Each structure stands twice: as C-alpha cells, then as structure tokens.
Image (tube, rainbow over all chains, first blue to last red):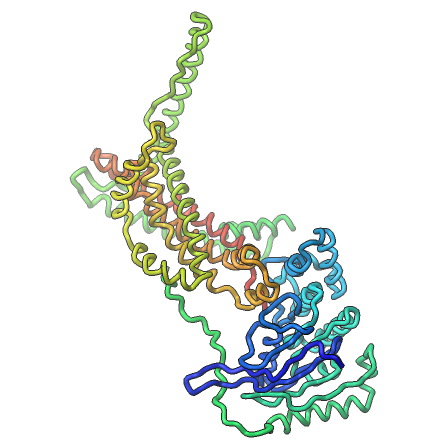
Length: 284
Length: 341
C-alpha cells in the first residue's frame, strides 16, 4: 500500500545534565490512506510524544515524518487534533469554538456556508440543542463531542487523537467511540489515536501499534485487526477472534513490552516542568 | 419566583449581599437562617459603627487643638448638612441669575433690535458637589489614560519575554514612586508643553490627571502581563494547530483569557488612582476634593476640622462605591476556568 503517513526512524530526546534523555528511539511506521491506527502502551512510554510530533507540536530530534508526500515541520489545520482534555476556549460557545477553526480553514467561503459546516458537525456529534452554550455549561462528554466536531469540521487530511476519551466514564466513552467511528467512516479520514484502553483500540482500529516501555520507546509489535466494518460492539464481543487479539494485546503489555530489542542505558526521562514558577512581577 | 431569583443573582453580582436575606425572607425561605444572616450582615456592622461613634464622641470631647476642640459626630453631620444646604442655595441663585438674564434679554432685544445679546455665564463659587464631580472627572481621565498605556504594554510584556525583560526594571523602578514626587515634574512639563490659548481643560486638571495616571497604571500593567503570560498552554496549542494569525490569536485567545486579570488590575488601579488624586489635587490646585481639604486647612476656622472630616467620609464612600462597581465588572468578565478540563 502506498503510505499516506510515513514516519521513518523518528527519535526524540531532551538534553539533560546527565546527557540526552531519549524518549522515543527509531520509531518507524507507515500508515495507509484511510487507515485507523492506535498506539498503545504503558503510560509515559512516549506514545503522546509520537502523536505530538505528527501534529508538529514538537519537533523530532532525528528522523522525519512525511504526510501525503510533504514533510511535517510544524502544526497546521491539515491535521485535526483532539486532545485528552477538550481544550475548548471557555469564553466561546460550542458553536464559536468550532467556528474558530472553520473560519481559518475556509477563508474564501461565505459566512453562511461556514456556519453551515460548524452547524453540521455539531449536529452530527449530537449537540444540535447546545450550539450556543459555553463549555462551562456542558458535561465532560459533551465538551469532548465539541472537540471531535472541531477536529472534523477542519476537513483535515488526517486526525490525531490523544487519549480522547480517557477522562470519560465508560458509558459516555462507548457513546463517543460510536460517534467517532461514524464520523470517521463518513469522512474516510486517516486517523492515529493514542490510547491505553485495549477494548477501545480493538473496536476502532485497523492496526494496533504496541509500543515498548520508555525510555527510548519504539514499536514493539503491530497487531492487525481485521473485523469487518461497520463494526458493531455487540457482535464484536461475541467473536472468539476478539478475545484472541485481546489476549495478545494484554500479553504484550504485561510481559513483552518491558523487553527491549537491545538493552541500552539511558538516563531517566525528564518530566516536563509545568509548575508555575513564581512570576517576578507578581507583587502588587 | 423567577424574578426574585434574578434579583438575588443581581445583588450577589453587585456586592449588595446585604439585601439577599431580605429577599429570601420575602418568599418565606427558612426564616431562622435568614434572620441569622441578617444579624451577621447588618447587625454586626451596625454594632461596630455604634462603638466607633461612641469612642469618637468620647475622644472628641477631650482633645483640644489650636482651632478648637476635635469635632464629634454631630458637628460633622451638621457640617455635611450645611454643605448640602449651601449647594442647594447656590443652585437657586444660579437659577435666579439665568431667569433674570432671560428677562433682560427680552427687554434688550426689544430696545435694540438686530443687536447681539451679550450672554453672560453664572460665575458662582463651586459647591461641594461641584468639587466631587471635578474629582470624579479627573480620576476617570487619569484612569483612562493609565489603562490606555498599561493594557497594551502589559499585553506585550506577557507575549514577549524579551520585551518583558526590557521593560521590567523600569516598571520596578517607577512603581514605588509617590505621586508627590511626580507632581512637580508633571506640573512644570504641563505648563511648558500644554500652551493653548483656549485650552479645553485647565492645566491643574491635566497635571492631576497625568499624575493619577502615572501612579495608577502599574497594577494594570503588572496584572495584564501576568494574565497574558499565564494563558493555558492548551489554548495556545489550539492556536498553533489552527495556525491562527497574530491578530486573531490576540483577539480570540489572548485577550479573553487575560480579561479577568486585566480587570483585577483595573480595579486596583482605580483605587490607587482615587487615593493619589486627593494628594495631586491638593498640590495642583485642581478644584476638587483635594483642593477643598487644602483650602479648609488654610482657612483655619472653627469649622475646619469638621469640614475636612466630611471630606474624609466622602472620599471613603466614593472610593468604596468605585471599588464595588469595578468588582461587579470584574465578575461579569470572569469565566469558568475549570471548564477547560
């Protein structure tokens, strides 16, 4: 298959006092057009770093990423990102949050048509009644629906989802997985999703990339999930193949993810510093 | 019912929390809780006020100054009433003056048809209320000037580390400077540079307003810088993913996000400005409350102390109201920060 997204031997490391800390090493993956890929691994293994590099939010230290034949050098609206927290702007309504992106992507289209796009996607994710409510008035699940609508409304080349349902309760999560799947099927988008939920990965993906533990995480094994589409959760749960794959995934996460192709001694990964350092002006 | 609910929300937003238990009582909502709330919100401050008045009266009777004994609450109250009466009398005289003018004009135009009537303006002394008005105009002029300077600089400071490092030492240097130090410089500069034959504003007004601005711009500047600097990185990532232009990012993300901080700064600025204004007016002889206090001090009559105390209370009450107004505005622009998660 001609690869649509080509991630070739990408590494990411941060300089520390004890030498560079390698988060991801030699990550290689080809994704076909329209494919749904999940990255699964233990928390802190660098799967989100890989996603951020595809999104262009951080740069790879070595290696390169090609998207539709062009190198990724920075973030852009051709890749719709759904973050773990919906990252809505709290002072804008659901509709205006979606419009912010739509206005940016379709600058030459009439205002009415742009409004239609935002309206359409918010209706598809089931928020037709809450267009003009602010994030503070929406539940977690509804906010993440807005996040999905915003990503799809950009009409991106591909979707990047960073544990999009990680903060939701399981019922809401199932609902939103269905919403995501139907949107994905309708728009035929290539998607890469980071998750640590085995069932979510099996239900949504064509292939599941299992990553080894960090530091210096990389592709461990790749699992093909060949259930026919459109998928039905109930049917899937009755399929013995589902449990075989599930077994394989859990087996990898429990045992084989700790083994590395070769042992390397790398310093521990530095934690990104999010602590609010006291502002020097904060006196008044 | 709904109306009462809205009334409660209004009272809470405007800081009139005192009225909330009364409204709740109107719909017979747990009377016991409401009465205890009333006791807390109305009763205790009332007790405090009475104790203060008692101590004041006791002290007043025993302190003797070069211009008579220290005035007690009743004397101060009488002076306040006197100032109101004076104001009303002045307004009556003004009215009478313009009535006489109109009468004269009719007779003049009859006697000299075609000739222009030389209208005259009433030139009575400003009353206490005119002085309050002048003070308010001056403080708002200064506050507006301060905001126009401080918000843009604050935004730039928050956006650019380099700009922040360039400006910060001077912010720290000038922030603690007293208005009394600024004022002479400002007055000299104003009289040197503001030389119009028919000035729109009096020089004393301009000097006072600029001094107020110089002293009150710092809290807004600092808070704006902090507000802009502490934008949720997730929101900035949204801007990066969408590759929003600098202007859109400023308008849609940076400013709305920093708005609660900016308003906190503006609120602090206005209260600093109001405090500085009195000193500035005293020295610049801007016909406001500051000049009133100074004139009373120079005048040295037996009423002086009581009149100055009236001014003190006036300044306090107006400052309190201004702060409440700003607090209400601040609450209107703040949003639910947790809604992002």
